[in-house]
Amino acid sequence: MKARNGGALARSAIGACLFLAVALLAPLIATDRPWIRAQSGEVLLGAPVPWAPESIDLSARLRPPDRTHWLGTDDLGRDVLSRLIHGTRVSVSAGVIASVLAILIGALLGSAAGLGGGGLDRTVLFGIDIVQALPALVLVAAGAAFLSPSFLTAALLIAATGWTDCARIVRAESRRIRSLPFVEAARASGSSRSRILTRHVLPHALPPALATAPYVLGAAVLTEASLSFLGLGTPPPTPSWGRALADARGIITEAWWCVLPPALALLLLILSARRLGDALSEAKSD
Image (cartoon, rainbow, N blue to C red; front, side, top):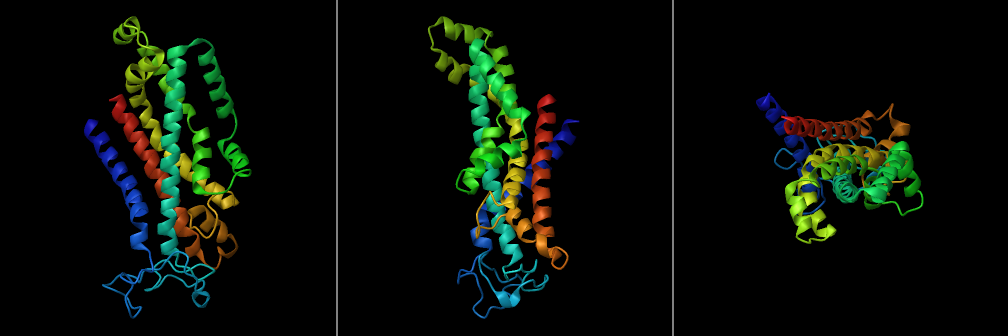
């Protein structure tokens, strides 16, 4: 069982790391820089000539996949592969920022509620119930309608709705830890509540909640793509998977290559994140 869980964890981590590597190396992979592009415009070392994601060539619009454009071009003649690679940066960046902020918010609120109890505990639980009672996409879309659209805005709004699961886990762990001897000793020695929280409770209560990070990442990627699809996420001309799907709605029957690559990339990234979360949860339970 442990070997199987370890293999699943390794495969899931490799899949997630591949998307991270593409996001980090996107400016080097897909670019119009002279030191990468062949002088004659021909194929270099068997690879397709790189294209900048914003390069428009109306004479090559809606070109199907070929030797020059491996995934074809869109309705403005832009290379689909380059825009897919650069769109990975938007999705991964928004997902990572949102998941990190959600974990931090959930950990702080959950540990404070579990350690403090009383009115603070009831207030945090009430806030969790309110956030979980409403559809996350509706809340995020409502907030995005009043703010300047960008992937950073989307990440902040997603984090504001994705902290609840982490807060519940950290709260439960904090309630268990606060009565342990080392916490009682710190309290008896005169340590302040904030010191007990940051030095004794939070370091022990946070690790179990880290297993929720991949789930938050997957949900953040899907929400960011949904916002971009609705026109509330990353503004053009910055490439994003949701924007690519929205732009291809009217040409799906004549240019399938504009829809299938971003849809598959979105599916694979979310699936990798969820599989990583499942593997971490199984490894923790073992």
